[in-house]
Image (cartoon, helix red, strand yellow):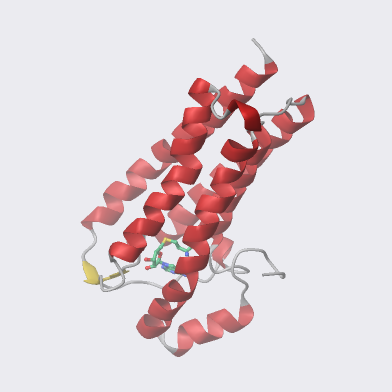
Length: 196
Ligand code: SAH
């Protein structure tokens, strides 16, 4: 098997693991009643669609068909090993954030009945570690798919979701938790501990 085939399969396996990992958490979260869904709107659904294109559809088309061929470049073993390592790290972080938020998780912006603010564990130093995990997935995609368009699509697609959403999410959390969230914002960063 070629290095390119191994790399594409590693990417696809990572994506499948990601979705499978989420299933039990999704089931649990669905049972929890929603208290405020006012931030669940067309804008947020559009952002989710853009992100899915960048992390799934565009790289998926490339992995299967090789399109767009003009944007491809040769792959190296170092890249594949680094890509797999980053994807494993992303999966671990993703699982940890789901475990921490539990029933209060939602794919769009929602506040649940008896929503508990989590500020420790993987949430101690950054307030959006699940988004950090998605960025790590996007970096793994860039490493594993040697094609400029398919490789970068994840960073661009998820980047759009993140930057258009994060301010609104923090606003929603401040409305729901008041000074508790303000204080949490003071002592934490968004996605990179100590930096941003
Ligand atoms: N931005 C977070 C969570 C993403 S899931 C992260 O990247 O880890 C999105 C939902 O999580 C939001 O609808 C919000 O209700 C909930 N949420 C966000 N931050 C939270 C926190 N610190 N504690 C509990 N729930 C949180």
